[in-house]
Length: 217
Image (cartoon, rainbow, N blue to C red; front, top):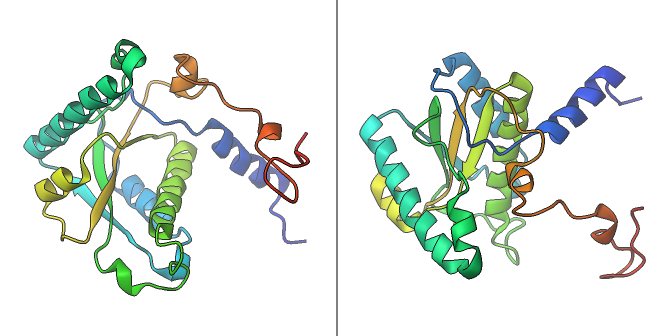
């Protein structure tokens, strides 16, 4: 009775299935109205205690975008060294499109989050879960619009926060690359590059206890 028409249901599942973390972009500008729709989709996300902890900073200054790229490059090299035997393999991966995409946003957690106790008293990390929901909303909306989005997390939050003038209690959690693409990857890029493979759902769903009666076949 409350279900959408089947074509709408199919479209929702298609967007979920075909969403990709994009790294390869065309430099074409993103229509401002489209960007606004994506931001509105993010803002409609659920949040614990309705705290709405997301803040988005649009990067329009070319020099600042280059500084963001430099910060990511520092962490990319550090991550590669931390991976040990996979260092060389990692360095061959394209992990961001900051200098290539039409739009760059920085998603950050607001300051003053400690006053939001509802749903966070024992799980304070639910603020991060909430902003992740907002980014996922944007991701799915972007895929439906035919626009690529890539989430970059290779940076030092304190250094990035200082660069962008974030309040001390705020925290950057994502650099979002948004833009037109030649095509979406057939599979997640890291799966295509044999970095990792999608796990079997049946091995991840339990019944009545950890590891018990794997429920999904």
